[in-house]
Image 1 (cartoon, helix red, strand yellow):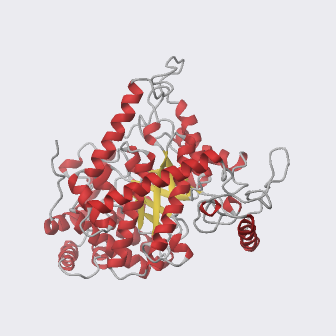
Image 2: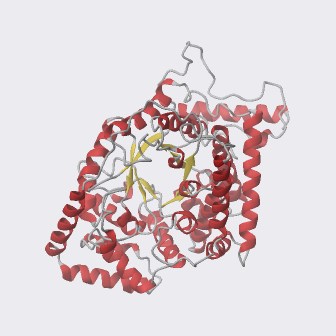
Length: 557
């Protein structure tokens, strides 16, 4: 790009920056020196390929979505939390909000993630252990007691039974007197990544996609601020993928959901802003920053060129980041504080919109109050003390970083081409479905994980405390243990709730839900009525399993 075009771009950026709202804060260095809100090529200089880097707030958004960067608004501190019963988790949420958290992120226990009630025989021993147990809308009432859902953004990490959990959240908001059209938050819902990596599904892909399409339609019509789909690369990376695989598989899944919305006759300019993304921030500092920058650029280009999006917000890739759980070590766990801080800094320098920082003890158990506070304070130290919020994309133009960004983008494009080749009609969706059935995704992830493990065992890759610097004076940590009493109480309360509800109303609502499932009618209103009647998660999912069956992954050798 020549000097004149670069200068014109800087002028456009300046006009948008001047017109944007900025925080009232000190934007100087620790020594008191003023810094510019953005940096670029020297005045009068050209820069080959600068159109791929650009200015913050302009296509292709490599440098961020907003001309102000974090001077306009910092990232949202959104700590992921959930354990035991709804009352215990409610107390943790209130602690997070009081300590400066900006939003809530709900972790559910394994029975809930699998669409089972706490008294299901397959739930034995798992209730409340890796997240909060939610059996019906009454649990949602307790979970958010004293927290106005209309005033706080709430993210829920759940995919297989995401839609029933969502309608229970809506019922809890109704009971608070909230205006449902004003609710704001994110539901993960991403079923593609379950087949690819995490393996928490209920039905075959087609019924799941039916529910997701219904949810997209309902939210676009009734709850426009709510994001019904958080497309998740986090679990793909945690399963062992490379950074390029995480990026490509995640964005391909996102393209698949765009194709789903278009197949429903929805306007891409209306529904695409409701898609958000969830990435892993791993320990390779510069590779992660490059991954985030490439993600925005790829998404904007494909949405514009392949799917016809014209509005700016439809081209924006907004994403939440969580530091890498798989990078945490049981050996010398206090070192995990350092790993988490480095990973969080990579997410911030990559322009994340919200962030969760893992606690040092999460490789051993759910975090204690103390370790959860350290994780929260890690973000606040980055935000308040380091100066990283002063300049938009401060590493932009680095020869190394730009080369990494270009390389990871090129690798992702090669993967997109292969996914399209897998399908029968040239669409991304067809390729994803074929790749799931053939085990193509899981085989590639397994190979990447195997190669990395070999490198560790050969000491070619090193982890402090594991295969390097293993001596320590550290003592064992005190860890959080969820009492078995939680399960006993949850099961008892569920039984009492079933006995007290109107069973005729519940049966009628579940029958109505199944009847709607046999039509092309949107299923959200019928499911909402079942939740209002206190139908349980297991009952709602069970009724649909009876209609649609369950999915079993094909055996592979």
